[in-house]
Image (cartoon, rainbow, N blue to C red; front, side):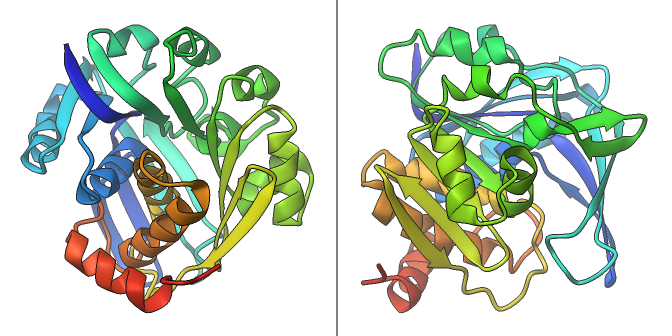
Length: 296
């Protein structure tokens, strides 16, 4: 059997990103951003994803980065349009032209891992049974991003809708990633600490909550706030995925408080450039020492 530190699961997405500066097409997907961040931090990472055979080159690109990739080929890839009409990076409209289907727990059979981090793009990509099956594996850490459960496809529009199975899913989650907009929608709380506490009330051990200014880590009854220190927001898409990917990677070897600092550092650097995180560990360490060493 193949053994990994973290398996990052989710569908590949071919993203068309529209901003006031212009339009670009990027190979995206939450698992893609998350896995690259984890790999750059030195863990043994792997990806489980669905995509079209026409996009097979993405599998080879992931493998070329030193990340094992286990594809499930579908008739179509998930095609997404992300439109930022202003320079407010937290305000965007999402559209989906096609989807690659559902990732199931059985797609991870034969793979041994310490943690599974799930980064779906929309509801139905990963279903509640996925977590219930994996929860039976002794000692495994389960992380998930709420974006893939609160976003629902209606026509070609990706919209927020109430998540009726939230309690069922969160009961099996160790680390939950959300952004401030999603957290407000699901909990009704505008205060991010109150929103994180609301998620914790469902049994989630740790919450990673990103917002425009930085990231909040809620774990072991404590709140830890870290600011982002980015020179630009050119690579805003993939911010949350990168944050979760790096947090889970570092969480394997350090407590929440420290893992949160590294996640903030990596995320700060990632949003300066479109595409998955590609900076070296030495660059991350220098950035970390400059902005986060000794930060509470």
